[in-house]
Image (cartoon, rainbow, N blue to C red; front, side, top):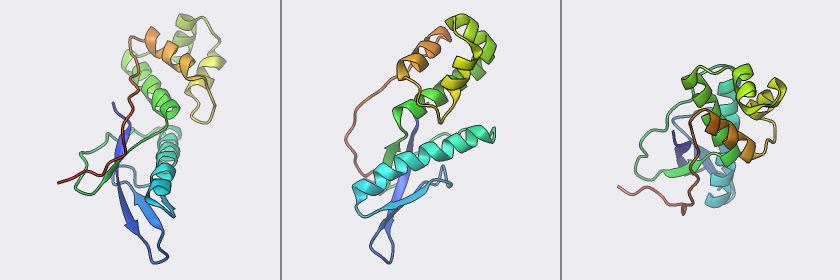
Amino acid sequence: MRYVYPVALAKDEDGEFVATSRDVPEALTSGTTKSEALQAMSEALGAALAGYVLDRQGIPAPSTPAHGEYLVPVAALVAAKLALRAAMRDEGASNTELARRLNISEGAVRRLLDMDHASRIDGVIAALSVLGAGLIIEDQRQTVVAA
C-alpha cells in the first residue's frame, strides 16, 4: 500500500494554513505557509497512524484525492514499519518467527516494529525481504490535485 494521503488546506481566521485528512481525521495540524503545513501534516499522519497501531486498529487505505487536495506521504521509516506489520500479518509471522528468520533477538524485532523507535531503515527492509515483501521509495514534486 502507498502511505500517501489526500490532505485539504484551509486558511483560518489568523491566516494559518490548517491541514486535515478525511482518511485519518486524527491528523490535524497547521503552518504559517502551505509548505510548512504540509510538512507538519506528514508528521501528524505518522503520529496518528502510530496511534492506530497502538490501539490495534486497521490502517486506513488512502482514498482518491478530490479536487484541490494535496497528496502527503508519511515519513519513509513510518511507511516501512507499517509495511512490515502488514507483511507479518499477511504471512502469519510472529515476532519470534521473524527473529528466527533474521537471526536476531525477538527484542530487536520489537524495536523494528516500534513506531517510536528510530530504527535503521535497512533493518526494516531486510525484515520485509525475508517475508517476501519490499519497499519502493519514489521522489515527487508536491502538487495540488486538479479537477
